[in-house]
Length: 280
Image (cartoon, rainbow, N blue to C red; front, side):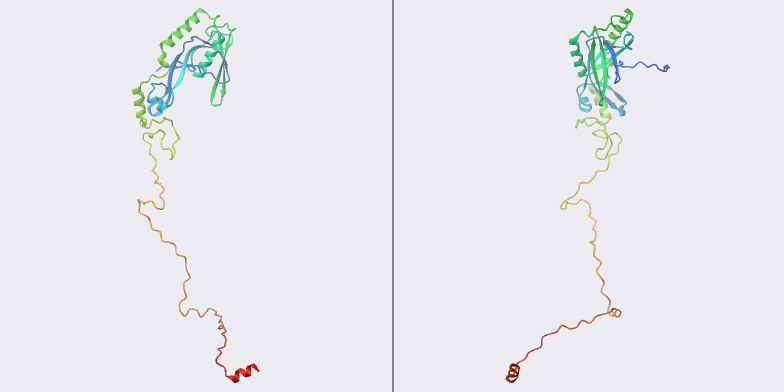
């Protein structure tokens, strides 16, 4: 293993891309107007130790990882500071929108003979990039011959190692990788990681290898639905009615005598003398 001096970087197996920081204003030079176009997917699967941009093969990769990203790679020279020809060779991966903006910018001047000023601003969760042509820039004209030759050698290497712009893949490699994460080929659902919840078991459509799914919840039964489990009989609660007293146990209870209800006198047959006496 090599000993790395602090501050230096190891050479990446892939061509190093230029990623401008938000809030910066940088001057660059396009070293070629013939970009290398790629279609790729961002694959982040810890189960198979892959976290990389992978080549799209227009198969199950598009169903599992979504639509492919279109990227246009340009070889560029990024100047260290204004007014200096010193800089670094980078690869600029332009999105479809940035590529269209560069095409529109080329109508104002030859981009191979003038430099471009790049303004990067943070816009929500993304980065907005704007390009401005610099027609009065003389940086490229003032480069020494040895620097121009070195830059041209980097451009030639860029076109010779275009397979290093993203990880080369095949349909068989994608199928093998998806089988290792238990991807459901029949459902063909997007392979998007989700938080583990009882409502959404697992991270993937067919679950994570080794993950224990939650116990199934039985459906609610209606009042007339047949029951498949024995029903527990619960006795109906009986209210506590008062117990009648035993005979002979009312001696200590005060009882009030209720008088009998008065009744009308009984009227029998009357004699003539009684009727005459009552009328007189």
